[in-house]
Amino acid sequence: MSRSFREVETAFQSLRRQFLEKAISRREFIDQLKKLRLRDSLGRFWMIGAQSGKWYFFDGRDWVVSDPPSEDSGRVKCLGCGLENESDAEACAGCGEPLKEKAAACNREGEASPLDEEILFKTPRENFVLRRLGASSLFFFSGGTGLILGIVLGAFAGASDFFSGLARLLPDSLGTLQGTLMGGIVFAVLGGLLGFVLLGAIGCLQAHLFNGISAVVGGFRVTLDQ
Image (cartoon, rainbow, N blue to C red; front, top):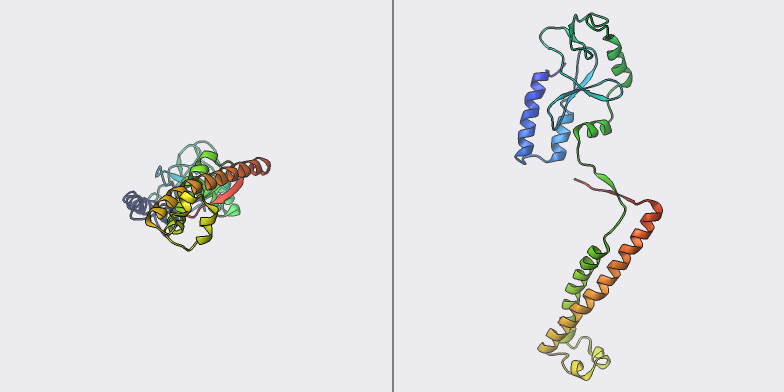
């Protein structure tokens, strides 16, 4: 065994302190914890819980919370009743629980998959299913974008003669303002209002379209990198 349980607990406390002080990210915290895995004399894999600090061993199928075996006595702790047995014992002297079969199960199954470890450590789920978009939220988001674009384009069109052909399509009261400072201000206001309404309406329609398709296919899977 390259590390002792006590050494891993000390390393865990150091890692958790760094994480709480925001010296390392959650992903770095989990990655370092995975490196603290131990294997005892019976071949069982042990890991320490990220939130609780409790020890877990892999029984061949699941991670089970348990106290770690004693390291200085050379004895084997029964995971059923907690009694420490001689290292060469085949079964627990207290409850009769087989000791060697536990090791064989761990050897057959090998190490737990990364997914099992992610569940054990309760890391944030990076994959989730998006099933619905708020129409009002998308309306204001898209409308806000249209407002900004409308102000910029409107001010440019009103203060310059770049869109000179536009004046012929406007009422005389607005056409005469193009190319002036006042025209830039008026066109910016009108462009902002028009952009907010148009892009807001488009965003609202997109939300309803997305929700309709999502209701048919059951949602869309989204992956976030942390």
